[in-house]
Amino acid sequence: MNKIVNFNAITESMENKFKIRHAILKSLHEKRSEGTSPGNIDVSEIARIWSDLIETVDSSENKIAEQIQCLENQKEIYKQEEEYYIFYYAITDIGTASFYDQKYLDEGKKRSREKYHEIIRNWSVTILLILAILTFTINAYVTIKRNSEIENLENKLKIISNQINRK
Image (cartoon, rainbow, N blue to C red):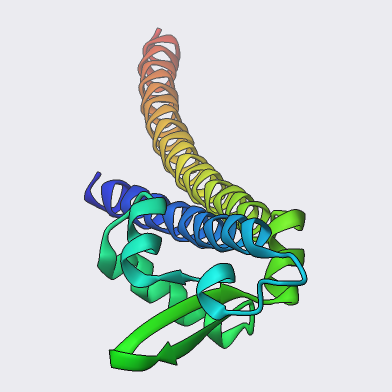
Protein backbone atom coordinates (compact mmCIF):
# COMPACT_ATOMS: atom_id res chain seq x y z
CA MET A 1 0.00 0.00 0.00
CA ASN A 2 2.86 2.36 0.82
CA LYS A 3 4.36 1.82 -2.64
CA ILE A 4 1.05 2.80 -4.24
CA VAL A 5 0.85 6.01 -2.21
CA ASN A 6 4.44 6.90 -3.13
CA PHE A 7 3.78 6.09 -6.77
CA ASN A 8 0.68 8.29 -6.78
CA ALA A 9 2.75 11.13 -5.35
CA ILE A 10 5.33 10.63 -8.11
CA THR A 11 2.65 10.53 -10.81
CA GLU A 12 0.96 13.61 -9.39
CA SER A 13 4.32 15.36 -9.23
CA MET A 14 5.07 14.49 -12.86
CA GLU A 15 1.70 15.74 -14.01
CA ASN A 16 2.20 18.98 -12.10
CA LYS A 17 5.67 19.39 -13.56
CA PHE A 18 4.29 19.33 -17.08
CA LYS A 19 1.34 21.56 -16.17
CA ILE A 20 3.73 24.10 -14.65
CA ARG A 21 5.90 24.10 -17.78
CA HIS A 22 2.84 24.70 -19.93
CA ALA A 23 1.61 27.46 -17.60
CA ILE A 24 5.00 29.20 -17.77
CA LEU A 25 4.97 29.06 -21.57
CA LYS A 26 1.40 30.34 -21.61
CA SER A 27 2.22 33.27 -19.32
CA LEU A 28 5.29 34.26 -21.33
CA HIS A 29 3.42 33.83 -24.63
CA GLU A 30 0.62 36.10 -23.41
CA LYS A 31 3.14 38.75 -22.40
CA ARG A 32 4.91 38.49 -25.73
CA SER A 33 1.59 38.77 -27.57
CA GLU A 34 0.71 41.93 -25.65
CA GLY A 35 3.95 43.60 -26.65
CA THR A 36 4.46 42.48 -30.22
CA SER A 37 4.27 45.53 -32.37
CA PRO A 38 7.01 47.22 -34.40
CA GLY A 39 7.49 49.90 -31.76
CA ASN A 40 7.93 47.44 -28.86
CA ILE A 41 11.54 46.32 -28.88
CA ASP A 42 12.23 46.80 -25.16
CA VAL A 43 12.52 43.51 -23.29
CA SER A 44 10.16 44.76 -20.59
CA GLU A 45 7.37 44.91 -23.17
CA ILE A 46 7.68 41.26 -24.26
CA ALA A 47 9.03 39.54 -21.14
CA ARG A 48 8.02 39.06 -17.51
CA ILE A 49 10.05 39.69 -14.40
CA TRP A 50 10.18 36.98 -11.74
CA SER A 51 7.43 38.47 -9.55
CA ASP A 52 5.05 38.78 -12.54
CA LEU A 53 5.77 35.21 -13.51
CA ILE A 54 5.03 33.98 -9.98
CA GLU A 55 1.71 35.85 -10.00
CA THR A 56 0.61 34.41 -13.34
CA VAL A 57 1.68 30.79 -12.76
CA ASP A 58 -0.25 28.94 -10.08
CA SER A 59 2.55 27.13 -8.25
CA SER A 60 5.28 27.61 -5.67
CA GLU A 61 8.38 29.63 -6.46
CA ASN A 62 10.64 26.58 -6.05
CA LYS A 63 8.64 24.48 -8.51
CA ILE A 64 8.53 27.33 -11.01
CA ALA A 65 12.29 27.86 -10.68
CA GLU A 66 12.92 24.14 -11.35
CA GLN A 67 10.76 24.18 -14.47
CA ILE A 68 12.24 27.45 -15.74
CA GLN A 69 15.65 25.80 -15.66
CA CYS A 70 14.31 22.93 -17.74
CA LEU A 71 12.67 25.26 -20.24
CA GLU A 72 15.89 27.27 -20.53
CA ASN A 73 17.83 24.07 -21.20
CA GLN A 74 15.35 23.24 -23.96
CA LYS A 75 15.84 26.76 -25.41
CA GLU A 76 12.10 27.40 -25.09
CA ILE A 77 12.57 30.44 -22.88
CA TYR A 78 15.48 32.72 -22.13
CA LYS A 79 16.47 34.91 -19.23
CA GLN A 80 17.91 38.36 -19.75
CA GLU A 81 19.42 40.44 -16.97
CA GLU A 82 18.72 44.15 -17.00
CA GLU A 83 20.03 46.78 -14.65
CA TYR A 84 19.94 46.25 -10.86
CA TYR A 85 19.81 42.45 -11.11
CA ILE A 86 16.35 42.42 -12.60
CA PHE A 87 15.84 39.31 -14.70
CA TYR A 88 13.35 39.17 -17.54
CA TYR A 89 12.00 35.87 -18.80
CA ALA A 90 10.77 35.60 -22.38
CA ILE A 91 9.52 32.87 -24.65
CA THR A 92 11.45 31.86 -27.76
CA ASP A 93 10.02 30.71 -31.09
CA ILE A 94 10.68 27.11 -30.00
CA GLY A 95 8.74 27.79 -26.80
CA THR A 96 5.86 29.31 -28.75
CA ALA A 97 5.67 26.19 -30.91
CA SER A 98 5.75 24.01 -27.79
CA PHE A 99 2.96 26.08 -26.26
CA TYR A 100 0.71 25.84 -29.33
CA ASP A 101 1.46 22.12 -29.70
CA GLN A 102 0.73 21.60 -26.00
CA LYS A 103 3.96 19.65 -25.90
CA TYR A 104 4.20 19.39 -22.13
CA LEU A 105 0.54 18.61 -21.53
CA ASP A 106 0.75 15.79 -24.08
CA GLU A 107 4.02 14.53 -22.61
CA GLY A 108 2.51 14.58 -19.11
CA LYS A 109 -0.53 12.61 -20.28
CA LYS A 110 1.70 10.12 -22.07
CA ARG A 111 3.85 9.56 -18.99
CA SER A 112 0.79 9.20 -16.79
CA ARG A 113 -0.66 6.59 -19.13
CA GLU A 114 2.66 4.72 -19.15
CA LYS A 115 2.79 4.74 -15.36
CA TYR A 116 -0.82 3.52 -15.07
CA HIS A 117 -0.10 0.74 -17.57
CA GLU A 118 2.94 -0.22 -15.52
CA ILE A 119 0.82 -0.37 -12.37
CA ILE A 120 -1.82 -2.49 -14.11
CA ARG A 121 0.85 -4.80 -15.54
CA ASN A 122 2.50 -5.22 -12.12
CA TRP A 123 -0.83 -5.88 -10.41
CA SER A 124 -1.77 -8.36 -13.14
CA VAL A 125 1.47 -10.28 -12.62
CA THR A 126 0.90 -10.27 -8.86
CA ILE A 127 -2.68 -11.48 -9.20
CA LEU A 128 -1.64 -14.21 -11.66
CA LEU A 129 1.10 -15.33 -9.29
CA ILE A 130 -1.36 -15.50 -6.39
CA LEU A 131 -3.80 -17.47 -8.56
CA ALA A 132 -1.03 -19.87 -9.60
CA ILE A 133 0.00 -20.46 -5.98
CA LEU A 134 -3.63 -20.88 -4.93
CA THR A 135 -4.30 -23.33 -7.77
CA PHE A 136 -1.16 -25.32 -6.94
CA THR A 137 -2.14 -25.47 -3.26
CA ILE A 138 -5.70 -26.60 -4.03
CA ASN A 139 -4.46 -29.21 -6.52
CA ALA A 140 -1.93 -30.51 -4.00
CA TYR A 141 -4.62 -30.73 -1.31
CA VAL A 142 -7.03 -32.54 -3.66
CA THR A 143 -4.30 -34.93 -4.78
CA ILE A 144 -3.31 -35.76 -1.19
CA LYS A 145 -6.96 -36.25 -0.24
CA ARG A 146 -7.59 -38.53 -3.23
CA ASN A 147 -4.43 -40.52 -2.53
CA SER A 148 -5.63 -40.95 1.04
CA GLU A 149 -9.04 -42.10 -0.17
CA ILE A 150 -7.41 -44.51 -2.62
CA GLU A 151 -5.27 -45.97 0.18
CA ASN A 152 -8.38 -46.37 2.35
CA LEU A 153 -10.20 -48.14 -0.48
CA GLU A 154 -7.19 -50.39 -1.11
CA ASN A 155 -7.07 -51.27 2.59
CA LYS A 156 -10.80 -52.06 2.60
CA LEU A 157 -10.37 -54.23 -0.51
CA LYS A 158 -7.53 -56.12 1.16
CA ILE A 159 -9.68 -56.69 4.23
CA ILE A 160 -12.62 -57.88 2.12
CA SER A 161 -10.32 -60.05 0.01
CA ASN A 162 -8.82 -61.60 3.14
CA GLN A 163 -12.30 -62.30 4.53
CA ILE A 164 -13.39 -63.96 1.26
CA ASN A 165 -10.24 -66.09 1.12
CA ARG A 166 -10.83 -67.33 4.70
CA LYS A 167 -14.27 -68.66 3.93
